[in-house]
Image (cartoon, rainbow, N blue to C red; front, side, top):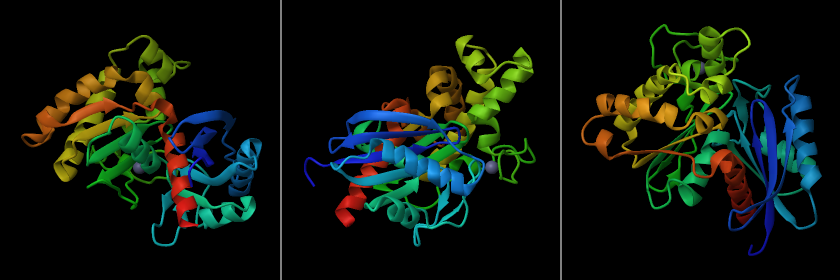
Amino acid sequence: MAGANVIGVDLGGTKILAGVIDDDGNVHQTIEQPTPTTSQAALLDGLEQAVRELLTSEIAAVGFGVPARIDRHTGVALGAVNIPLSDLRFRDELANRLQLPVGAENDASVAALAEFRLGAGRGSTDLILLTLGTGVGGGLVIDGKLFRGWAELGHIVIVEDGEPCQGSCSGRGHLESYCSGLAADRLARRVLGPDATARDLVVQSHPALEEIGRHLGTAVGSLINIFDPQVVVIGGGFGIAAGELLLAPARSMILREALDPAGQQVRLALAELGTEAGLIGAGLVAFEALEGS
Ligand SMILES: [Zn+2]
């Protein structure tokens, strides 16, 4: 529908970012609220409230990027590591509350779609995106199409019997245990003291960030060996803030771990759409829901 506007909602582990998006992917007014994490009911109320603050008669559809495992066949949100969401027909529930066409995909998948179409992946056919935020999210575009399976790339094992993973994940040594913003907070406390956070490491360009970058590169090297992407995009609040402090050590690990010639050819880049990638991607999913309605 030409000229229509939609609302995109990027649901994160700590905040809800919602915005009005036009059909060129431009973001207009946005609002930000803390994510209610006390219960699933509170979370759904918070999402509905965020949308209603932006809702006008010009809004044709709403799209959500959700940090949860969504069954691509049924649309059921099966579970989430860092927010209270399980076994819920998420898309139907929000469509019912809002009485509008609703689309919902994994949050990192929608960010991958946005970077592929409008950001660092423009002109490519195969892209991997990792978001380093509260957790580590993953999204894949293969042969020009968004992969709609779980793509829980944050929960691949990079250290056998390693650090316990976070939230509701029972695993050990997962990428998320080492490269999320929360993992960086833990590292900051270890090297700088009990009140330090990931932000302090970034502000000081602290050499400890190299440790995180090497873990990131180890994971990316393995992913390259499976998917052979042209571009690997790093996004998320922590990922973008730390930027080249992570990417430089990651590149040296990629050269070691990825098979020739992928390690030399792959482009490792920061999300061009910045922390709005998830929001814009949620808008793209809203337009898809509108077309399908
Ligand atoms: Zn995990």
